[in-house]
Image (cartoon, rainbow, N blue to C red; front, top):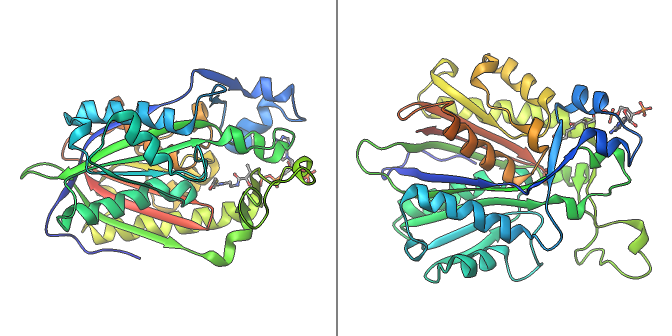
Length: 333
Ligand code: ACO
């Protein structure tokens, strides 16, 4: 599903991110399961990941990232009228994590809800809030990707536990003034025929966790990695191409591509297919692993702060996750 360029431009007024203090290295993981730093680095590019402390919830990380984004945007919490948290690891099944964030920020005038689109959630939230702002329904939106995946990883399964980490990234969206940047084109898609490739099968109503099945660890991430890999490359390449074309640009016009941070080999394959030199592709997964909905949000914040692009540059965000879901956005910064 795609959109046409909107009459009212919506810009990203501020970004922020937060990751937990505790670093878990590949060598430390190799003491728990049969793996090695060499295997993890060559297969994924990941060197370490952050792990939330006990009592540090998804909403806590989300709130910290949000405060930084609000400060950069120069917007008070009371001015926010829409909060969307993208997460597959909510604090509680209900209420939504966005409600806890609203409470912590004191953003009492906001409508707050979560969306569940796995690693694609932050860009789903961006498209939804862009449309709601350009329709005039809301003025200032806070969108957040936040995950505590460490709570849903089977720490005895070497095929998945090496991949994931915790963190949060946020952005404040508002109507753009003349001369400011804008979200030019967005794209998102879903293929529910492939739900079986990547899921947390237990913990929902289909498979509640009970005393009898608790040992089977149904409430942990299960993935057919090779299959996911193939779809990730194809879908992200297509989505990126579509937003670039719809924005009236060519790959040569893009100063920086910020892809979902799951696997360096996936990122390299996409860069190759888009004919994009490595220096124009932002990567931080070596530090954080795959933080699902948070990954592209953290990467956007770090890329912007590191000077990977400047005001007026065109950038592309592109993501892929469980569902299967995918999304992309072309942005004039
Ligand atoms: N250490 C050592 N060996 C391992 C490990 C490990 N941590 N994990 C698996 N292996 C072994 C396997 O057992 C297998 O051994 P075998 O050949 O004796 O059977 C061998 O390594 C190869 O395993 P593969 O699964 O084929 O390895 P592959 O090269 O496909 O890499 C990986 C696996 C990294 C998971 C890759 O498939 C991948 O990145 N897939 C995409 C994941 C992704 O993008 N997810 C995004 C969405 S996440 C979300 O939405 C929440």
